[in-house]
Length: 204
Image (cartoon, rainbow, N blue to C red; front, side, top):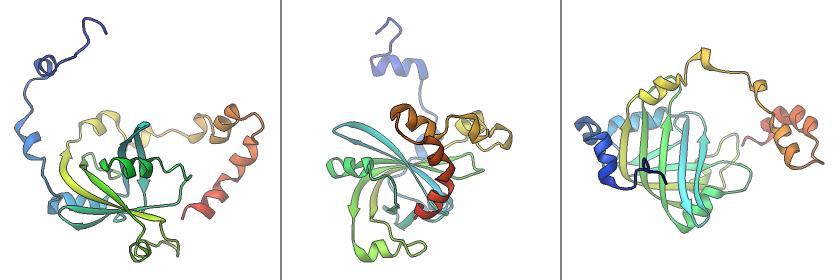
């Protein structure tokens, strides 16, 4: 640490001052009708969790409405097919605390929910989230403890939704190239060439 490292709340608060009143009244202990409208419109949510190995942050996405608001305290999220690392689920089994960040394309505001999660493999519940005849292996049930509406500043500064800030995927290393650097025997070209077809077969 250096002389400029902040190590106490008093030092931190001296730099930033008091929070704006509006930022405090936006924090609720439930999901209001207005907040529900944002969840219903969001096709993307990031889930943060914590476990014995440390923190994890994982994306989830589906058509808007895939996160189901059951009541002002409860949301359900299907766990779609992935790579079976199940980092988030491993964490939740050992520590149920999670945080959700909802994003909506074209909208600057975001919505955060902090709460506790449990994992359900109930057949009827999983079946209710089926897409193209494919059911999720499990569904996350999150009990909301705090819901908070975030202003636009971060997304405006980043110009996240601006068409002119988008770049071609080819400007970055391909997935095959990244894996090849870790495994010399990996066939990067075949992987990259076949990925679009692979994605179509395995997305659900």
